[in-house]
Length: 251
Length: 291
Figure 1 (cartoon, each protein chain N blue to C red):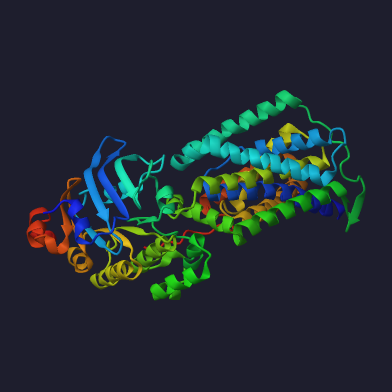
Figure 2: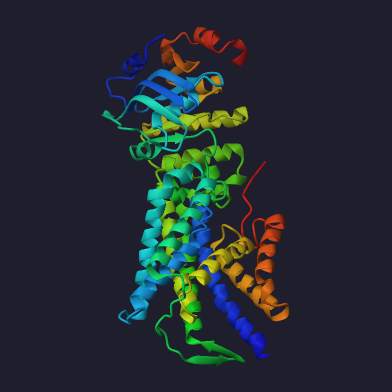
């Protein structure tokens, strides 16, 4: 097992594009969801966060991008983007700093046509074409209201919307939720390509252990709101770690 | 025959005004999910600001109309940002109730300054009347309908064809996702409030042109916009306008056939009926849902 700091060393001398230190997330009812979480995300690197239901994966991602004033949660800790400490992080600010979250739920505009909602994010024609080239399925479905898309198409659209914000860092929550294994593999390979071709730093929380480890560079394992393992995939005894924290049944 | 023609004329004028208030209301509801009972208050504010400008006949008509509308629009947007934005994101219902408070404040403020009796506007438009078929059409009515038609046209164009309109649609659909994609939901909602406030001010002016600036009459129109919107579809700006015309037509039919005592009973019963049988109204869209 390695500390999050060592994950950085393994990917070379570059500095992390996003890092979080000692992140704590608490909900308004007093429930502490995450404590002492840290991560360094390197350009071109795909980090996968594994953990059971309720282990704190979603709360961690939300903690990194921060909460809106009316949302019933708060995060403490230090988040830096491009080496600069972000003061009072919130989703609007992080989005403008180039950090995007593909959320677990409600991630598309259900009543708006696919192409229209992409135009909400940008009107730059070449950028829209580029993203439709990347997700050809969305081009076929461009005039469909998003509420009528299939689960896999909805994930592609959700990812496309965030990508159109031109993020340097992509946070992805449960890309595989409710999808067939074949679709999950397809989506995971999209993430791999984003890291390889665009140098994006990606942190993907997922329950699809095999599909996500197949494309991962680094792994983090969460249990009861805390990080129990973190490091480059090849430096971890991944089988032992998975056995210890996820149990054989969940693999 | 002339009774019918005159009733139709009256329906178009009143309906345009209901429709204008209703369109602003629908826009505001779409973008901020708040049912604003304060639209009548903004109408009142518009009517009285316009009255102040025209009291001594100092302002030309069109600049006075535009200035009034702009002032009320700015005020409405500001009220949203300062008072409602934080609460609205969490509690659209509480905010809707709070708008009743806002209506009360606006009514009280206006009555302190101007009293509660109707005030006569100087002749800001020509007193000439035209004959159309067998109806008498005063210039004031033509101007009122023109104001409403242009204003609703502007709202529809903004909503359908501008980036702001697309943002409003998106915020209406999923405000928190908008924020995650870098769109400030609070600012978009404030813009919707401003447009709705400006529209209400114009409706207040249009309503007062033909008669006097009457606080009670104006506020009543603000309330009658509700059946109009429910008829047209809560989230449909164009639908709300057509709903206004339909409601006014129905009211005039009731007035001619049964008697004016039945007006409110029929209007609000119709609203309840629509809420029960067709909650999306005639033109509102059902949500795109796939199970």
